[in-house]
Length: 306
Image (cartoon, rainbow, N blue to C red; front, side):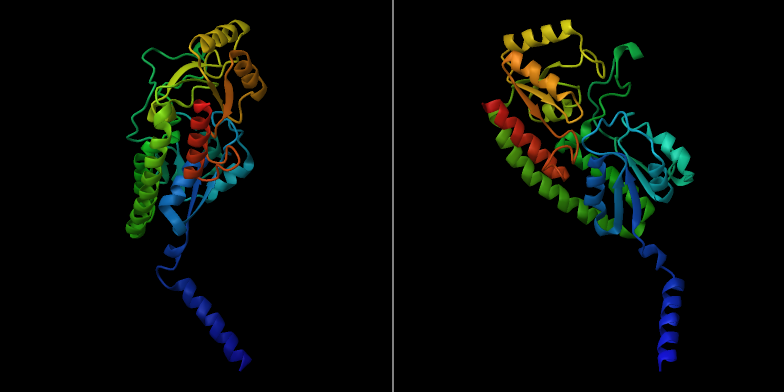
């Protein structure tokens, strides 16, 4: 009897391994360059994929250290989801080291979610290094704007459907359910931000323009003298004077910025330093795409009302 049972188990296993279509049931392995894109890909893909991120929400997305572990993740990946607009151009080095031809730039396994995004702050002059970390294709931090999630998730839907066309209907249902949830929260957020619409703020690094524009806030200055360039003493003196003259209440900074400097400038200007989540996971409580937006909107609206 035991021999017969063993034989049946082995035969069942053999059938599973050889039946057509079983391999197609394997979850898609997706690697995103930043946590926001991981979260949005999971919203569309649901249980049909396993997603990972090459960076964390608390670090500078412009300057990611390439490690062997990244190359291993990419070697196994079916799909790479990238931000584009040169925010995550660093991934090219890791992809080259992964020896995965499917995810090289222009490959079938690459999803560039910036397609169709109405890009802000596109330079009108020739960009060079003396200007600091200026992006020639425009500001790449659009995932901070919840109003652009429909475009981002549509790009993700199309990319996932290329890899698994049999699941397109499921991907679309997942996307619509997520967007319905986001739209409901957007109504709440818009109402919450309405009383502070038109308020001026100062930011540490110019990465908040999409978020600020969505909710009708005005960016009146940067802590950095130029993007990615530490400020000179003279620049800081002028910035504090501007904040006082324009009665600016808030200085926004991200987890990777110099917190002590942000606090010092805000104190001298009579303003409040406000830490926001630049990406999912950037601060405690911002552990999902909607959660990060919720944190940022509630934190900023409260600071502007004080």
